[in-house]
Image (cartoon, rainbow, N blue to C red; front, side):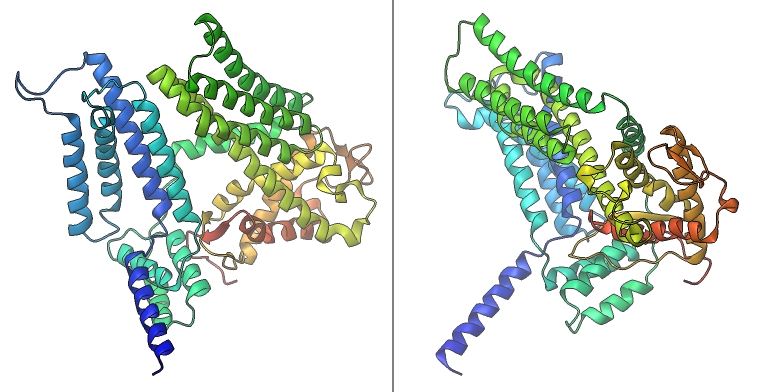
Length: 494
């Protein structure tokens, strides 16, 4: 073997060793976010408890048992559990206990970095918040990297282990199989592991959480509100007022205390003004480009979360928690609105592809999204928001998947009929809300259509429009990183 060949072999061997030590789990987002949430809860819960109880001490005149010790004990227990017990049974326990322990530990940061061991060192909360931001960004960076072949294979084996203890649901199996097919289809072990994974039993996914149910209802209310007169003005005004209130609050506080003193106060004012600027840009775009406006709003909110809030914690201490909670709630709601808008655009593009030949380019319903009448945009949003109800009706669900393309999914003929009827009923209700009436011909100007009738009164070619719409649901969801999975075995063949 040549010197270059020997060096190449050594590099390959070392790279394999590094990869073997860094095999990521496809569940890393769920458990790392759980770890982070428990850590934040540990800090806030501990701080509020100490404030309410007058800072009690565990010990005597000589000893003081710091809660950093309890946090270390919790992290030690989590570490032992991670080493001693087979995943995935211990992973949730490790995330919860380890996260809470880390929160208790990092809460003592002021003692670790000050000469006089000062727990009440004023910048401590801001520094802890920076630690959590850094962890969040690091977790997101781990999530965004593409999975390698060895990672796909190891995660498929993890799915088999989960099935052995009765904890594998259909969505998890689908994600594991899809990752195998996309990253290591040619690996010798891939085929037998995939065959085994297809044969293992699965359990039904857990029922939607209360948060998911509330979010679904809120999206439905939001979607119906988008067609109301003044919607865009109200949304733009809300974000501008929210950002302007923060700026005004900071300015008034500084004027009351005799002006700006120090870097922290100037940084708070500048970052809040930057956030307000982004939101004003979004408000100006709201009338003609809603998705772009939402993204500017999000940029303004993220500046508030990742920059302004750091200095607010340094200046206001625990009082800044309420402001942070309000900002995060607004961000979560805004992300949901952005996802609905993106999905609605996909629905419209599918409709244009299906109906261009029949309706002609001049039909207003085939316009580009930016030129589409608001009532028709709302119709697309309504159809996108209804996806969850349709999938639930045929015992299916949409799950996140890893990889470039979602696995293909085809509804059974019976499922297509059920969903097509549901789509027609949804369409009739949505048209009625917008003031459409039954008429001899379809007229978007007069809002009349001959199709506002019961399903059994429709001609077969009109029913086919609804059937085509539901058949395209899996592809439309795939554009948003979602794959359709069946929760029960279909009663009829495909």
